[in-house]
Amino acid sequence: MRRFALLLAALTLPLAGCGANPARTDFEANFERLTETLGHTRFKESEDLGFLVGQQKGVAVLSVPERTRRDPFRAVVKITGKGMIKVRENGQEKLRPVPDVVGCFEAVASGTAFPDYFAEVSLHRVECPATDPLTFRAPAEFPPWMVERLQETLPKKPDLARVREAVRRLDLDPRVIQEIAEGETDEGEAAVGVALREGPDGDCVYARVRRGEARVWAPYRILPYSDVGAQTCTVTGAIKGYAERAYH
Image (cartoon, rainbow, N blue to C red; front, side, top):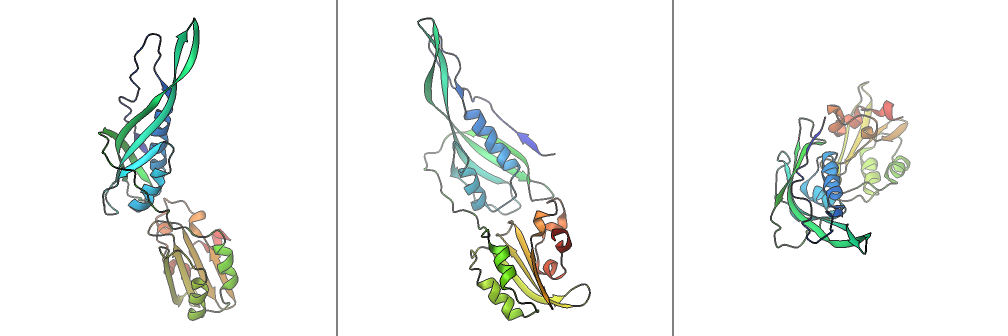
């Protein structure tokens, strides 16, 4: 079970004035949404995570230190929330807008033995640095038509050069990891395998060309991420037909 350390101390807006109730803001909702998102996010590179965090409502990323893939993900974020207060005027309650509630936090997300998900997320309040929000490019993604296009263009016999040309014609994002190689199936049949991955920790697509057939499938859409074998995405898995039967 994933654990979340929601450190919500001092999130209420200090208000003064006769008849004013505490502000009802969406600050806490933005805070909790960010924590929940990180807790259910696959472990990616810092740039990809920075992009994801920066897309959250009311959240700006101010810094992301360099790290290795085994280190926790850390980022300083600014969370902003809007709200209203109840005030009594002439014997009637009315809602009045209040200034934005703003707080800065260091977000820390730590992985487990299965690094596909964060297991523990905490946000600790810090002083807001005088820096502008960072921007990140979107993570590498497969085009939605890729599986169908690759299926159509692969040869029907294990020809390494033609398989490479079929993959080249997809014109994929250069960050997509590509492995293409010849090998033998478990039955000793010659085959060419293709393993494509959206960066170090993205989705995986396999293709295998044997005499008389070419098949493309996405094993990660079938098997749970807790399955260690589903995390490898190697050309050997493609040649051996890993999870091909489950997909089809």
